[in-house]
Image (cartoon, rainbow, N blue to C red; front, side, top):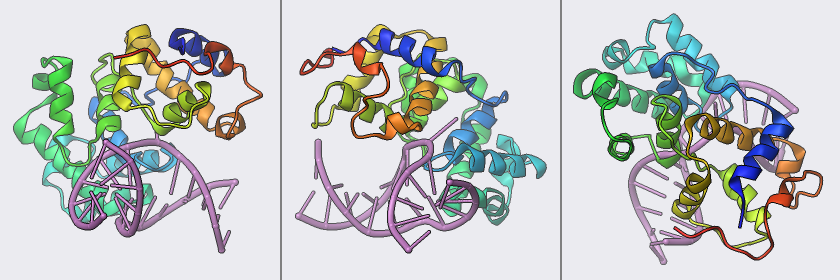
Length: 217
DNA sequence: CACCAGGGTGGTT
DNA sequence: AACCACCATGGT
């Protein structure tokens, strides 16, 4: 069994506060979550700055903008045609269908379902938006976390994201720690230790036992 | 030159 | 349900 609380403490002790999300505006967080998909934050941030300079970093402006202009703005973030189309789709939903003030009042489960219905927003992005934009207690399951858990359990078989989310949520349910956790998992994943097939240098393996399972859902 | 980065979608088996 | 190709730029 992995003690996710202890794992969090170990990660925090090793890497310190990560100060996520590096944006204040709510829509900027949503746009950033889409732009950063399969790309570095550096390039996503540059795309956000370009959108901002064109006055397009708001749902109403982005909803009515020329798609070709949006494509030019977000080109550096990669997959620029998809991202421009999806970004505008999200903007149009927020501007004409359902604004933040309405979404804010929804229960977390309903809000998650609403986000997942949008084109370009899958499980990871939806949970990131829930956590960082709406400050709901969501567990963001990414490839780094899957890999980390796989290694701690010394297991080759994959663990379902649903079980993983439930297991983490059972021990960490407050927004501040869930916020740090996702950032810390990525910080660790980017290190040499996090990238190694077997992690021998770090002390993270102290928080699990070989052959045992992740607590059940 | 190859490989990776804070994924998601659509199609195939 | 698992797997696959595809999307595309920028950095190492």
